[in-house]
Length: 146
Image (cartoon, rainbow, N blue to C red; front, side, top):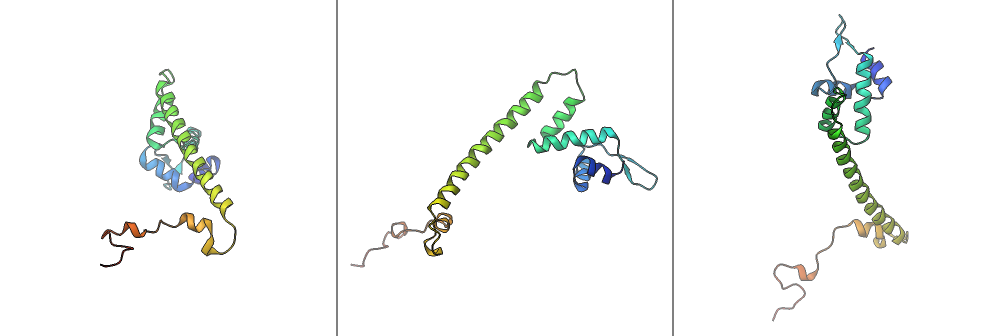
């Protein structure tokens, strides 16, 4: 199959396929006499594996290790399990941060009275804090000269 066919079959963009070839996570394909790439069903399976791993958030170094492990079915899956556990922890951490963001956004929206922008809680919450008179480095703000 040609690169366009592989792209349609796996849902991976053509430029991404070429990138994976350049960095070595997908082997360089055979070439036809007209220099077009030719991919095998094994290439499609490998690319599907990579795509699924990327969807789960695995980075390319981890995917390289997982691909190497896949080629050694008799090896222990301890490394694969460790990599998956680390990814799970990273996802849980992102979810926790996203939940905090969700709470903050919900609070901003609920506190907005939908009046004028000058009184808008959303705009106010997003604006950087304004310096107060006490934050003047000279220490003289808000005082009168003797």
